[in-house]
Amino acid sequence: MKKALFCLGVLLSYLMACTENPFGGDEISQGNRLIKGKVRVNDATPENVYVWLEGFNLSARTDNEGNFQIVLPPPSGQSSAGGVNGIFKMYFYLANYHLQSIELAVQDGEFLYSQGPVNSKGELNTPVFLTSFLKIETRVEPSSVNQNSIQPIGVFVKLTAVKDSVTVINPRATGGFLGAAFLRNKDTGEVFIVRSSDSTINEEILVTREPVERSLIFNLTRYPLTVGKYEVIPFILVRHEPVPENLIRSLGKNVEDLNPAYLSLPFKRQEALLEIF
Image (cartoon, rainbow, N blue to C red; front, side):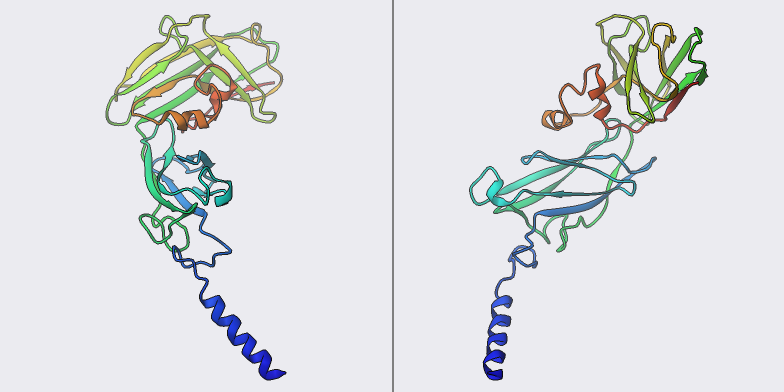
């Protein structure tokens, strides 16, 4: 009986040794559908970078340490029977930073580990590094206002190109003012939109290293706000380098329009805070 068990153990060990995944060295039962990596940002903290995998339309956002991971669906759930094959780009996106991408090989619906930028564990060999091309600084004056106040509140945004000139769109603007801004309650997440006018004209601004400033004035009579602290976010669009249309669409419906979906666009900017008491 003991001899029979010993022989069975040897046989099982042999069979297990023959089930290696030829693409990455992991066991087939685990698969190679996971990619992990880290993103670095040259002048800011690395959270909220948008990571998007073309072809699969999968996405993730980096955490506070710049880490992310994306998992492919099982091959049986992909668009091609038995799993997709090909070379696919993974993009790393912040709206006011240079777009970066890497190429990943997929075979039979799984990533090919130990190839290109990926090691044998499905991790990127080196961090992806993003550099800014546009600085966005926002301030609000006064920064603290009584809920019943009728005094004007100013939102000011200063735009500065880091190196080369940058085209910025100031939507729904007139007379050199900022067209609109979002006020997002820090506690509830509720979003309010304030506008300088009812204009439908888009101003195109060529921003250089010489700062350009736009402002918007509103009051709590026209835009009543509840007590709380509000993040003040200018409504601007950046047109500096080509970004895949499908990447923008993947962020949500109408993310470049004047609605709360705009806040899904990932930016790095100096935050302004308005307190209503």
